[in-house]
Length: 522
Image 1: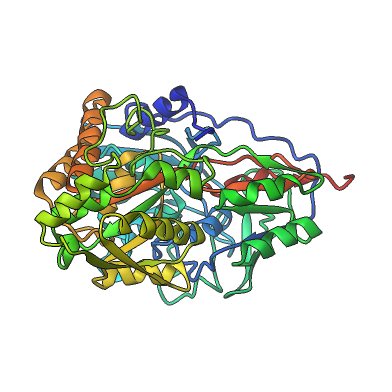
Image 2 (image 1 turned 45 degrees about the horizontal axis):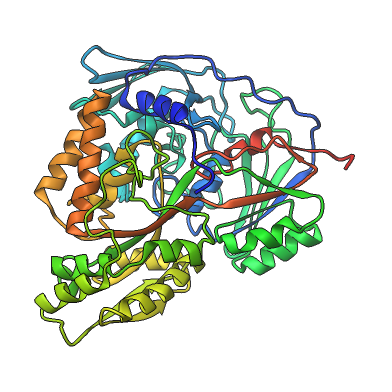
């Protein structure tokens, strides 16, 4: 992939994520608003379905959270952590207590000042089994969150927890919600955060409209009067809106549209921040043919990943695992790290394994897919696996939310899901690999893997931690718990030339819209 982030930037992320650099510092100066006013329109897909922070395992709602809510920390465009609602923080010597000092004078959209009680409420809510957050397993290491005073909050940990700073900067996990907005509030209609934009209305399958927060704590921002996300699921319709001028930005996940968008006058592509998406093929390891490790290994060897990257991504991708190469030093990198077991395309060896498993005469599998790239990947896999005697039936699901829910709660055979990367390996892999996780996609239970995952989250020595996550990636490849056809940027975003100071961030979010402005002279 041509847009990897630098080793230096990623090392800084790794140090921060481990807690070795967890101190307060000043954020970089924001860009100056060249002008105020105007509404930015973005075609958006899929429908976010639920705007309740911490409630949805699908990624789309978090793109809206970025505008309405703040987190305690935030990620800069280069991936480093910066202060957000917390201005400084420090760990205790044993790394079991994190104290954060909160920004004063910050107002929620409904008019009350932000305080430590809101942080306590947010994390108690996320850790409450009754709330049923799919991310609840991420917070097992937190013993207690308490308000020391109105502007100081303390996280007491059961053990050193290296990924904590990463979680505190991740909106779809830890967007700060007000304590006086109880579960009875419908956050699709009454959302109240401290972010740069306020929710005006959400009309499912049509649009989400936001307006500028006049009391936003970053004085002078946002530059825009508002943002409108039009729910448009057809990529061709998104491109048409961008070409005709009814959309100011367009972000598409399929690189086949890049040549088309490059021909739109008075527009340009925003450089991607790095590889943040993985195509993950989840298999039912509990029952059925894919419960047999020989079948899973055969499917891995029967997958020509290079051909998929060339055909589906037009070469804009790379081999990888759930922890992409760009996440130095944790990610597996082709040519740098030892080859992963069963990654090499070898259809003859795959046939032998299937025969050993009792499928010498062939095997029938079904696969659920929804997103366009996943559909294309499945179609190519069907052709490739036919060569090893596997007949793959593809079941298209109308939307990704339904597909993901089906796979998490129903015992399907296989499913391709688009997975989103985080700058800490724990956040990458824990929730989809740990045996008791709410979204263990492979439904597997592996004591050795659980032990490595537990070790990775408490190890604060970066060299030792790197080795743990290298072992995790090798183990998952060896057991073929999940298969990864490719990694890629979250999307490829194009903007009109009058859109200024928008920068992509590693998570693929629209967090930089608070600094974006429109040059009305153009």
